[in-house]
Length: 267
Image (cartoon, rainbow, N blue to C red; front, side, top):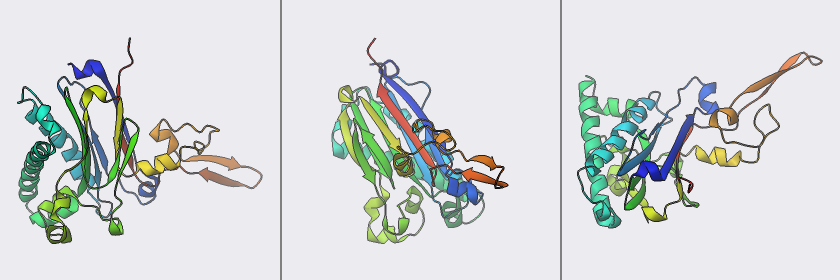
């Protein structure tokens, strides 16, 4: 099966208005390949909002994790082993270990303390999908949202809005002692690819997009929210009588990033 002939992919990311107001960057990142055959991976990463440069880790590791998955699975003639939860967990552990090895190497070579580098740059969540000819897997480490054939899977929120991060495997956190299992990739759904019609993976900012579904686009009498950049535009108009400028702000407080896959329509 040539997956490119079977599935279409689209994705996008927009900075949240709260980040714009305080001069922060978009801390989300997205990865999906332009070309794919037997294996397809989609990754969304969301940097820790409490750190000024966590987008660095998100943007670096979204493609790193995605390509590592494709490279590792490319060595197998058959991917049916992923149907077994235990073997799928073991595969994702290898991906996690590979990512952490890169993270450790980069952090050490930055010349500062590894702990400081990880906390400043490499705290991000991961939501992902692996699509093979036989099996499709949806997983995460941290918070976000997943849809599989219309089934909605909410991941988080976490107490005090503090989700687990991949980087916590390298630095001390309360999770290392209290619940170390949260620092592994967690599988939420395993499905037969032949039964997969459509799916979505997203950062936790999707909840703002869902809440805006029936609101009008800023400055326009339209309720469609199909374009992330439009739904989060800030529009302004001049009130000549009142001698003031009125602003209508976008609807997405937080960064929102999503990747969507759907089966191509029958010809």
